[in-house]
Image (tube, rainbow, N blue to C red; front, side):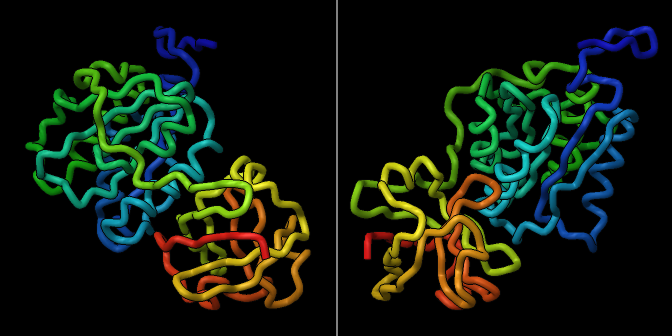
Length: 281
């Protein structure tokens, strides 16, 4: 669908009357970094609506940022431009990327941060940023979020094409997550995220669990290092007894380990990135 805006015919979504730009960073809320990025976006594309996904990603934690972006991006309307900056390699030889998908556009560093979310959308093209827009400001070697990624995203939101900012690339840093290993008797998975309730999000999906051939109510064994702990496969938190451990499909499509009305991460003494092995009990 198209709209006539100021005498110019613009496509809905990217370049629409109210283009949508999301922001995800590890900048926090004390320093002015996020405000500077928003100011740059709005100075280029005043019609843009900017939505903060989060600026509370743990410092330099690409894996956490990649997971949160992938968890949330699919809920945004088609045509959204997502800007993500968790960038410990800023100022180095690492590239900036524009990733065009079937639904949206992702802008950020080439360090794996964008790839899980973009892959879920269906990647159409990946472009290395070699020709960022001129903003009248010298590009800082320490703040590409403001000086490169924000201007590129703003121009794309207002109708420019991702291909305008650099050549197509076939090789880029892949997703920071590993695929789980699954067979009929056991599976090995990774903890991707721990939410504020202490629930543990794994990289297992419902498809993986079907391959494992488990069922609701089944008792399973969790092996964490040398520890072996009992849990139960359930549909939701209330199916567990208080303080009982369970494995269930979470609201974002990943299997979660949870402990009813308690903190599973604390109880299992586990951190993000840890491998958990699951088997029949």
